[in-house]
Image (tube, rainbow, N blue to C red):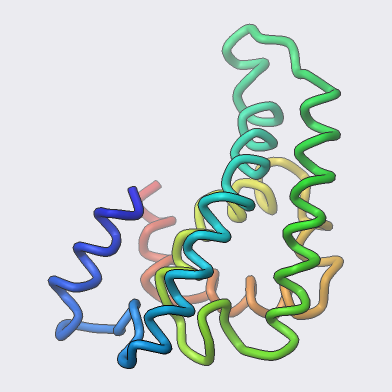
Amino acid sequence: SRAILRYCSEKYSSQGTDLHGKTIEERALVEQWLEVESHNFNAPALSLVFQLMYASKLGIPQNEEEIKSSEEKLNKVLDVYEERLSKSKYLGGDFFSLADLTHLPLIHYLVHDCGKESLVKGRQHVSLWWEDISSRPSWKKVLELK
């Protein structure tokens, strides 16, 4: 949950990357993009991942209408991300933050398991952002545990 992420970010802020920002302005931007992820990105991305990876495994027919709708919504969100990332290296500013971290699992599934890499690769700045955040040593370690 995002609440747990915030807690861990605060508790361990002196032990690694500051994921929440140092100034009140940085923290506000991180929080803003955490809300964007939560309210705009997460639902369509999760729906696509469920429909494309898990529905058939659970004996549920894929809902083509839901897939199409979720992909359309996600395209709109990623267009906003493209605009944002044309102005800053990361969603919350020029530093890696919780706002970026929360995207790692679902984008990983979309790109590597669902055949939806064009959602990311078709956008120059989103693609560069994804290459950056997904190549972090900590994320690679998480993937090794998978």
